[in-house]
Image (cartoon, rainbow, N blue to C red; front, side):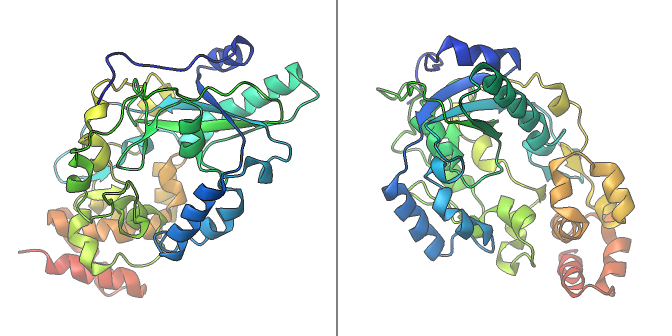
Amino acid sequence: MMPQAPFSPTVPDDVAGIFDALGLTLLGIADAMPDAAATARYQAWLQAGRHGDMVWMERHAVGKYDPSQILPGCRSVLVTGLSYYQPGACGVGQGRIARYAWGRDYHRVLGNRLRRAARQLTDRYPQDRFKGYTDALPLDERYYACAGGAGFIGRNTLLIHSALGSWFVIGEILSARHWPATPLREPRHGACPTGCRKCLDVCPTGALTDFGEIDASRCISYLTIENKGPIPAEYRKAVGAWLFGCDLCQEVCPFQLRKQVTTERDFLAWRAGPGVSPSEILAMDEDAFAARFAGTPIMRTGLWRMQRNACIVAGNLQDAQSLPALHRMRIGADLILREHAAWALAQYT
């Protein structure tokens, strides 16, 4: 159930002040203790092949639940978050872009501030070491955020905060200096209702399970972003209009009622979202792609994968403007794009 009022744990003033001055909220502090049980669960998840072709996740196993493997002598994990939610909808005939990618790449926006925070902490405590990261290291950020009282892990596997919902990106500073941890003594952020299946039911590929786990190899975000090969035929209709990522399990979550609209100008200045016409993607060359999406998360996916996705979206939308490009791609040199274009053309009636 949802708590009556939003909650954030109390953190020490000396460190919270540094985060506040940089426009960040220090959501919580976790002890940097290794967790053998969590490591074992992660290994079982990998062995089941739930990570798809993300082989780098196998290399991450050693430091996933042991921060000292990343920063020797790490004693505390300082967790922060930055809201990216904003209203908006793509136009008719456009492919959808996940909200976090509408504006500037959050790795840069949040990462730059975390590096500044780490430098300020080093200046204040020169005898200690500090390293700031956002989604760029093996650490299970959600696990340590939850351990530091920043929220709870929802059935959709996302971290849910009582004031932000799940529409925020997480960053952390690994610290060789120890601060008292801020774990929750009670479920102050709430918990998923026992009978709620909204996120499970809305997922068109069945990537979410009843046990709060995800088969990443079936997730639309994985299929359209991380997946470096063809999108399996059995999931193509389920991809729908999603060109990049997916927000469905967040959009239906009851804990989004208190979501806050971001004030970050870098997120509000749209460069990629909320939607892009598949015909525009299919007509691009590398220069046009870079000119259109430079500085956004879409750049890491690259033109080839975005054109693969655009074929699927064009077919699902039966987008007339994409037909000339699909016909050209159908006889092109790239075998995978040829097959995806042929699939798309077969969807038109």
